[in-house]
Image (cartoon, rainbow, N blue to C red; front, side):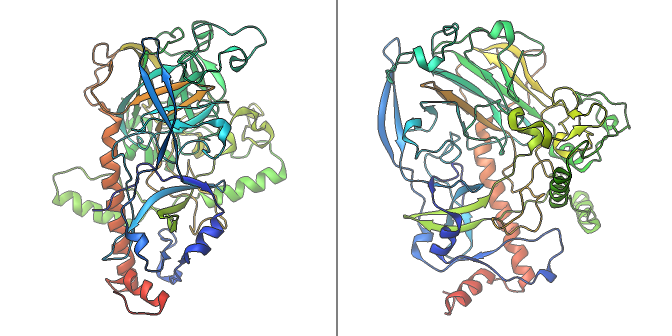
Length: 551
């Protein structure tokens, strides 16, 4: 069975149009009248070439430097070789063609485990950044400013845990007045007494060129600040906040371990939130907030508030592109029949639509996919208040800490009931990093329609939306991650105020994501074959493209 790409491929600066021209890919001319307006699958037909059927190889690594700890421990770091990279709101997934059906499937590349992503990190082409990984892709370091790297696994529902160990960080305490950390610390890259770190969770829209917690698309703790006890160690939307229901910790040192646990409601609840049908009275065990509403009562808000005419037009275009689909009675009837025939709970009725354009480049094969567009309301505060949605009662942009809730009028400002991120340090429970995390299913997340996508609507889930373990390093900071047990410290010795019987290692999502993507492939292929009336649809399409018989 073909496997989903965990690493999401490797990047190089090449315009998307050239990629399509160089491989001869083209969207198939499917009769749109055969589709309903809700389910349209972009299809790309690619010439038959042997290179598309090869196994994916591991990204080559070149030794860059070795960090030496205080006790003589050695940590080897490597730069990554060739990978695809673009700035056109695209991301890439490794792919491989099935030689029998000629469909393309996502394909995993070594190392085969939950790890830091080959693709979801800052630009490796910029030499000054010196992005470096360990061979197993579980450790990361870099130079210059704050930059974010995500894992190849993510959480969509349930409770998951992972750990991050400090390898390199500047000594505890504040830097001299009016001096930056980089200006006074030593420049020896082999040292483990340099830099700073943030660790947490990030959504797809979180930018790689910013630190975690710089916008509302990510939540993080700073492992060193010099004033954590006084002002807080939490970073969210460029704000410094305290840990909730516990205590902030002092600056950490190499060898210290941060444990992070995320809790998300079932996708069934999540879907009701983004569709606007969630009733808190139906789920009294799930805490809603941060704004408090009466049961069965919705807050009256304006979608635009006080905005300029151009701002209103842009908002209307965006709302039109993310308009959710109408309920399908046939689907509901089918699910009812299935539930009566099975003793198992059916998964959430959820549509996954992927726009994946396969192409080959320098011996590697990828899917090129449109990425999700950050909403200005959740971007960093410095993005400008004039273009942010305003609360009509205050005339100011919505306060993301106090004025959001699961029934907010704006889908992207709706929060998930019962969601939270909790923190452990060296096995000791410290409290809640953040509660009431923002929803991520469409239309809370959306793809901006245009020339860079063949999608017919922006409110689609490509199956990869969720909260990703993520880290940021600054000027030599280095960290090692554990996404699977056995843990360095774990959470079992000090579980906090509640039992953790349902908690799992986030690394378990690695195999689950492979299965999820494979199932979506099967569903898409059956759909296309039924739609076009032939079981060899792709083989026929390829043969028609090249003007020869399918083989």
